[in-house]
Length: 291
Image 1 (cartoon, rainbow, N blue to C red):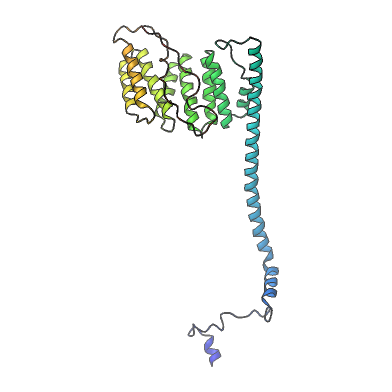
Image 2: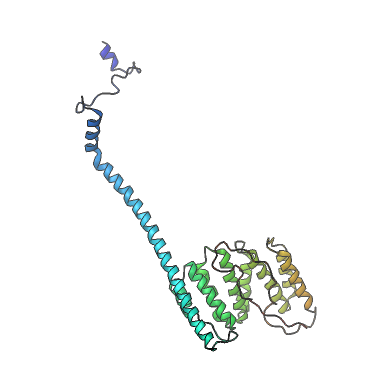
């Protein structure tokens, strides 16, 4: 009777039927049961383990290949830079180089940038090429390099702002004033760029408005600069812009060079990326003749 009752749900505390012994394993030791279980389930277990290993290997392999590729790009960049520097030194030793009118050697640097257009180092290389062309006054070619640099600097806003700022300046100075001003506006309004680049863009927009005898535009950019909430020397940019405004008479604008005065000396912000100065080492403007 007790055996019959033990098989009904009326005796929930009776666990005699809960842990039934498999007829095939009755009397076996725990070790022997484990061996039998392994033989029974080893195939699905091995499949699962192999899948996990394959996924891990794929991830590791992808990371390894990515790091190896990056190391290769870095090596190429160093090699290209060294080749151009050696060639440049040879020119200088032969007294056959005038830095005011001769383009420095950037052949291998440009070739590297063309081979790696979307890499960060490719973006750096393009900026270096842009600087070289800017030095000799070839603003159209310089602008093309600064613009190309942006493709490799999408994840480096500290340097992307520099490339776009110089692209704007060179575009304007090449004669394409409308697009030059549009590019400056993009820099000025981009909150992920360094304040030093944004401040310089606002400053140049204000001064260009004065060159174009557009007082209303000048006032718009002066107010925009004041309200931009720049954390990096905003008063200095604003003071220099107002000081420049005082150089211009209200009537009878004289002919001036087509680009603002040299940017004010502002302490540079430290780039988190390294590799190139956040503000650049080349003055993007020339001195304007004062009355």
